[in-house]
Image 1: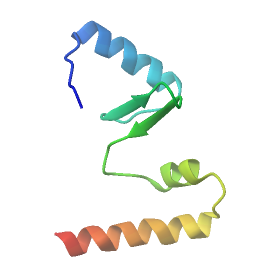
Image 2: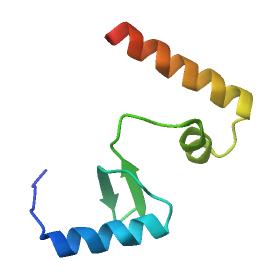
Image 3: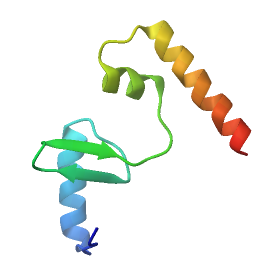
Amino acid sequence: MILKKIDAQTANAIQSLLQQQNIHSTRILIDFEKRIVVSQDNDYSIDDLLEAAGSISPERGQELLKEVSRSREEWS
C-alpha cells in the first residue's frame, strides 16, 4: 500500500461528501473499482452492524454487539 498525503482542504471536502452518505468513520479505505467504502474504525454501534449486514434481526445484532464487547474485554 502506498500512502499519499492530501492537504486539509481536500480532506475536509472528502469528509463532507462522505458525511452526506452517512459515513462518519475517521479512518476509511475507498475502493473505486468495487464502489465501496470500508470503515477501519474499531468501534461499531448496533446500527452500524445492522446496516452492514442488511438482513440480520435486531436480536442477532444485539448478540453480535455483546460478542464484540466480550472479545474486547478478553483482549484487555
